[in-house]
Structures are given as C-alpha cells and as structure tokens.
Length: 224
Image (cartoon, rainbow, N blue to C red; front, side, top):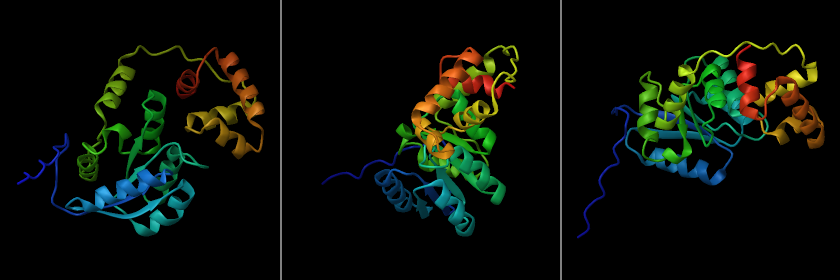
C-alpha cells in the first residue's frame, strides 16, 4: 500500500482562514496550473485569473480578492504599472509579484509601485501558498535570492547623483517605460514606432547616461 505524500513545508506561516486569490499571468498553461493548485489547497480559493493587466484592472476591483498574484512581463501594460493602478483603485488589496526576473531594479520598481512581496516562478509550489498566507497576514514574502538582492542593494555605498537633463523628452519617455519593466517590443507598440527606432533611442540613452545595460540605466534613473 502506497504511503501518502508528505505535505510540502513552507518557509512562511500558515492559517486556517480561507483566502481568495486572483491571478494575472499571460501564460495560459501556467495561469490554469496555478489556479488549480491554489483552489485544491485547503483554505485557499482562486476566484479569477486574467491574461492581461488591462483585463485585471477592469475586473479585480469588482471581484475583490484578498491576494493578487501578478506577473511583470505582460502584453501591453506591464505588471508593475498594473500594481500601481490597482493599489490606487483598491488600496487594501495585497499583491504578490511572481516572475522570472530577479534584477534589483525590477524588484524595487515593483515594491515602490505597491507590491507586498516578490517571488520567483521557480519557487512554485514550495513557497507560493505560504507566501500568499504570509502576505495576507501583513508580511512581505520574498524568495531567498530576492531578499539577498535587497540586502546587497542597501549594502552598496550611495552613487554620485547624475542628472538626466541631457535626455530629450522622447528619450525620457522611453527610459521611463524601461524602468516600468516593458519589453522593447511593447515600447515600440505603445509609442507607435518601429523596433529600429526604439533601439536607436536606447543606444542614445545608454551613451548619454554612460551605461551599458537596461539594469544600469534603470538604476541611474531611480537615483534621481
């Protein structure tokens, strides 16, 4: 006779109360899989799931979940921008980022926008349910590597402030979209310009800011 599998232990505390969860994720397979895993767990219910930020902004304020699981790289509006708008519409809502990105600039952009926690997708399923519970109780759950990145960021000496006055209004607009986590293709679509034009502007931005990557450009922007 087969023995029942032991329950996976979470790094976060548990509770017996039922928690209503909504998912915002453009990968349909992952979205459905998360919904099934959450609804199958005792004390949890996935009440909705959405494939875009735009859809989530229309429906989540009406659905009123306790916790929202949010991806960053969504088609159209980014998850970070969606967090900010959802928090304005429903200040009490709890939002957890669930993403593959662990760059410090995206972590802090999400937290500044109002996210209550930041988990990496590779942490599924070990930490997810416990993290949902912990955030619902007022905590700030983070995958261990993300927490390490936060500590590392605050351990660095402050950089010399360099103004962005040298950028044109269009370059600042594109830099702002980069900081929000938008992919270059999304930036092109939003601004109704070609990918070649986006790349040209990004090359100019990097040259003017004396940086060589999206991360460095974002970090410099956030220090202003």
